Image (cartoon, rainbow over all chains, first blue to last red):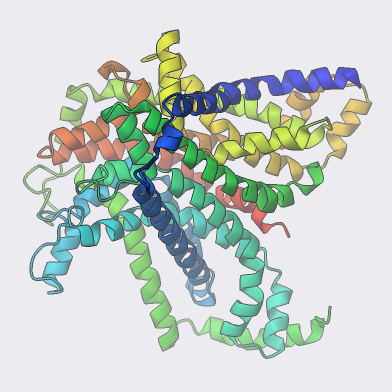
Length: 286
Length: 292
């Protein structure tokens, strides 16, 4: 069907045009840029990989905040879905409550949390002082002990609802006969969560783990707006390093090289995503 | 399957009396309710506080007082020209969402309903757009736009937002289309209906709920986007709300009232859009994950 091929091409053209201009062209540009300066090789200086520290920090941030999100998301979803909350008719209310942080734009989330974590006026410090947990205000965003946990708190607050709502939707899809059968067989609550509910949630856990990995690994906004990669360069993740090198230090080649490394790592994860999520979800289409 | 229906029914009467005695709370339940209360406060307090604080005067902002509500913060915010930025954000986000959703609906139809060579590869390529680090697009796009004279223009930033929202929109829409029976549009094609009309008259109306949800996501993405706006919109009169809000935050940290008013106005449209759509949105996103 030649007519079919031309028609399909025509229909896909608009979407592919945008994607080629915005993804393929910049990738080629970055590759070229990183190779003309030999920066891709220049990332290794004097036997040490420059940029490795940013990489390690990024991996840690991603690993921890993704785990926190998945675990808290699961717990929160189980809580909202529990018989108790349903009986008190709080489950619906919780759906609405979960929308609030999710719909709050990241920039607003950062502004609020920076305000809340402020050493002088922030409500978190006030609470800590009143309850006598700390003798003097904590500088959450400029003290190296607290800056990572603070960042992870902000990211988690803003992104946890999406994870939780996905798990909740998945929980609702468990046929009630399955759970009833488990309780008839004499399984305790905990055992049925472990053996029936969690296995059922696994596909959703895989989707959310992969998606939040992309979102966190690639994210520039949270770190940049919250700490500006500081104090010093203590929270300089890969995304902020790419930005700093290109726009502050003017070292385009280095910036491009680091960007290519980022893209390569995410493409590897992307292939997992294609294999385990997209392929399975859209099985019938292919 | 050995799920016998009779015992399941027998357990029912046991569950009901507990449900009826709602006042009697067991310690375990109390713990659950307390956890729920704390979670609810942590989730809602920050955003609620912004709206609350935006109506307080500079003097009472930091105290817990509930007196002295004022529109002064908003009045001064608009006097400083914030209205222009609201307009910019609205025009850019709405235009980008319309174009991106239109393009994505067509692409999703093709991926879901048509067979052609390289389909899996092309679709995979589009999906990889979701995993791509935007930060590395900034420099090349900036240089390209500078050459084409697209910096500080609506056209430039709209084109950019269309491109970054397409992959996720196509993903969601193909997911929705998979849940729509094929028989309808296939029948129309057999009846000799022109393919473009099939998309517009048959497929589009059926998948409208999915289209609305997808457009809402795309809107949230464009509305709160910071990185591309930072690079591509450098003239003050072109800037969107997130840029100006952050600039406010940096410059006059003493003007907390104005910062809060700007933050409240930035958070308001997504909240208004999301709250009514809540259950549909989360169910839609999870559609793929829920399917076994």
